[in-house]
Image (tube, rainbow, N blue to C red; front, side, top):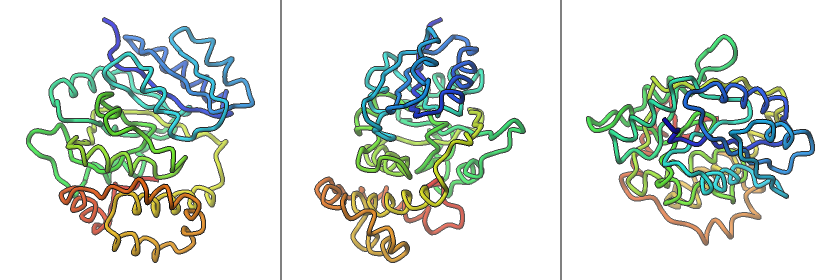
Length: 284
């Protein structure tokens, strides 16, 4: 039986981690095709990716950030696409179970998996938040509705992803999942957390400083508010993190040009999540 899911990985200068991830993915049956987007690495990333026969390597001349995944989805020849990071991989039964769920629930556009961190398989803190989502679980959905996910452990319906344009190049990295979640929900696609789907994440030691990550996420949350939220929410976001304005300023004109306010039901979902103590709308 041929695989119906392609695994898409974006990586940069993490050849050792990528090698382990590809080795883990190569044990899956059926063996999924893998697309590796090399975001202008300077190490042995290309050589590592090329050593696996099921991998299609696309070397990019510049670092496109999270939006590099869009090219991987476009070249995928399968109806579903599973995202992995270069330090994460899928449990043996996850992809086949996701294919079954997508077949049973035609309005589901994205499945968020249970993320198990490290060799001890502890749950990522976002996992219980999604499991307890205040958006509830409709009878025609495979799990609780969510408005956010972790990109290292999500599987998308390719049709839905391409319909909304994928990850925004404007954001580069940081909170990019939130905008994609908004756009999928705005087009009527369900996003669901499914506990039986499992992904393993062994975070790389080669990571940007946490201070850089916080600044990028604050900047992007402000940009996302400009792109999709009412102006009162833009002002609230700006007041919450005034330092984000400086980082967002060069990108604001484009954000205003691309502004499309969320439909009322999706805006209500976003405000519901923001009004709860546990909010899966913006995982870290």
